[in-house]
Amino acid sequence: MLTFLMLLIIGCFLCLFRVAMGPTPPDRAVAIDTIGIMVVGICAIFGIVTGQDFYLNVAIAWALLAFIGTLALAKYLEGRGFDE
View 1 (cartoon, helix red, strand yellow):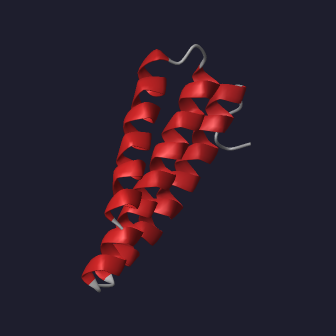
View 2 (cartoon, helix red, strand yellow):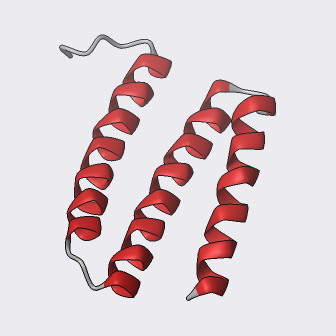
């Protein structure tokens, strides 16, 4: 479990580098979405290790918010309004 956790943390830092140095806004958006997916994985690992379902609830909520945020950012980058 520790190996998977370390891999996810390293992946988060690599995605943070892509967010900071990304050449285009869509690259940054994909990196932010990937960070969200990795945070959900970290929460799932914590939930499995500790045996508490609180972390899984946080992971589900984070996944839903990340999905909605990605949709909103994609619409903004496309140039469309949120009401379309």
